[in-house]
Length: 512
Image 1 (spheres, helix red, strand yellow):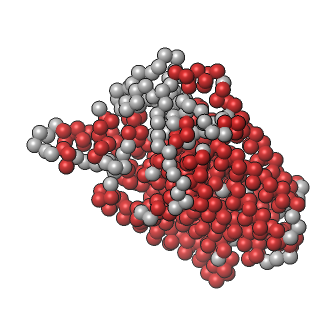
Image 2: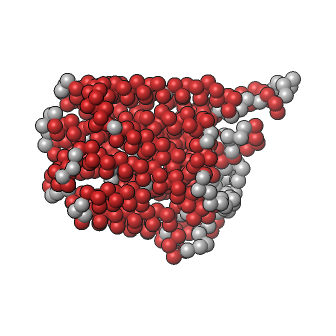
Image 3: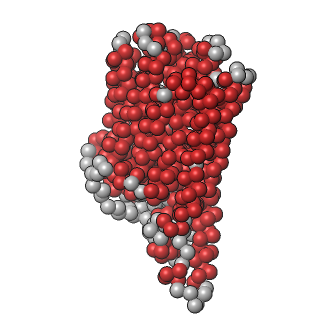
């Protein structure tokens, strides 16, 4: 039985390899064939939900996370206009981007543990309500100080949804198919970062900059209603595999969709999988980051994300001031980066699933070969499954794309080359950066499946704070080093930091 093999490796749990078994456990009568069962719990699936339902749930949570990412770039195209409106400099306007990134990173670290304990659904509802209030304030605000404060509140309220969306994807999946769902959740959550500038340009050109925040208010309100009706609780410490409903705060914790006849019947015939209740631990993300492999994974991931946000920021100012683009043309120029970000997240998720299954199959063959040798002490010498190699070999592809894209972007703007080159570079930077974020999030969740939201918040913290630092000094770097020199420096930094991935792979056999 494969369920006994993972005892040789602390990184492989029963839930991680349940979908790679050739022997398929029987399904209950009347149960949809898409429900995934395990050999460890033949009468209890890992998740009550079918694949279609999982995708539906992940899409809803990704919609919530999308507001976290869209709120920063959606008004990047109107930064020059807002400079004149509030009578401030370009550096001062960049502060509104920086403070948003800071609070976007800090809030999930402090409060991500709440969703692991009190549930994903109730925390998402609270986040959405705070976010809506902040947007109403921004739409009515007329002072620069108020703009900065409300941007902080906006980020504080909504940023937690990014980590929760990855936590929801982790709740319903095992390691063999987790990357695809996390990739989808990450891609949808960061879709706003890529297409936000396009929407901001279109809205502000048709109306004015205040309409941007009214748009966010309306969009978040509609999403809140969808969440209230359709998003079920998935935290495994509360509902297990979904076969039971939350016992506390049922008026808000139980989604009406869970009472549909099909789902209700399935809950009644499905045995639940019990899990331990975690304790409140505000330091959980920091404990996760205390691990050397985790730090080495987060470093290049954060630098790639910083490059991406710098690229989005540079686009608005450079195309306006250097290419004399109108607002609508600047908005349209962001389309390639949006397409690159979405396709990058989805593509890498599928590739990670494929690579995991391939390496796990090899691992099982190696274990069997040890068992077949009677002279070998299997207990002490059995090969261990290397989760780092199963995930990180693909990381060099996004690194290469970010390096190449950064060089093309910087020198294309520097020498005012055709905009097509700039748009191509934004596509491959977005594709590569989203690849790396999905890889790093998947690895951390694999290592700490019981703290999936806290693990995702580690990625969120480091990427946001790193991006905040680089965006804050972007104007100075561009002035001192020129645009070409600035992005050549970033290309070199990305390449140098990626050596940490090589080191992890080299040392990983000793760390598993």
